[in-house]
Image (cartoon, rainbow, N blue to C red; front, side, top):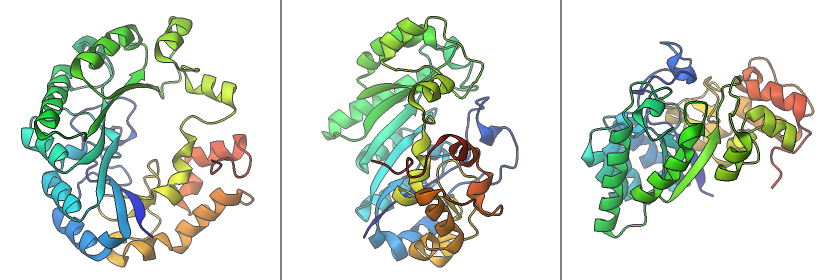
Length: 312
């Protein structure tokens, strides 16, 4: 059996997005730092034969990690598939990183970019430069062609909010110009957002709901609720080796993967308690369990029936 995992290689970021929980405090529970190549090498040397796939992005900007190129190269040399599907802001000035993404066959690259003009973009992506993002995409596409590579598949993630909804049509044109593989739209966390022209926006984007509350009302489900499945499908490991379980949790399960090994960590008692709860939801979790302090846990208890999380 081989595992898919999420290993957050960097929780540092060069932007200051208002809704990002990691930027609201100078000392988040999971810490601000990056995966050291030495730790990654030891981890892969011991557990690499058990790993099929690694998602490298989560709470920060992965390519700010000074060891990022060496990490990509070492994973690729061990036939481990790499992904940056959670996202990068791509506000980087490093062509060597861009080449390494292609050379080491990172499967997907989700570029988080809301808006087409700098005026719209910087209202949320504070300190970011939208033209730098677009130029990096152009370089990636050109290098893919030079290497005759289909990877990475470049996905443009566009969050709908008041400052960006007027540029949706522009985004489609820009996506075609840049030759990205996909442009998709995501709902904002901002509860105050009210679309100015909802029917037109739904027609343009193909979305059935434009806010998370509307999504819940129409589907009876929580937006992006599949994160609990990650405990089974793709458990998250922090940059320092602590087991976090899913992409939302910032508190450790009390076990370090780098110290005890991957399989021992995934069979740790507290982590197994959370997995068992996801399977049946019949009892409450212990208050010391990281999942018990998760906002999603509370919402799931209120709105979902047993087993809906893991239904296919």
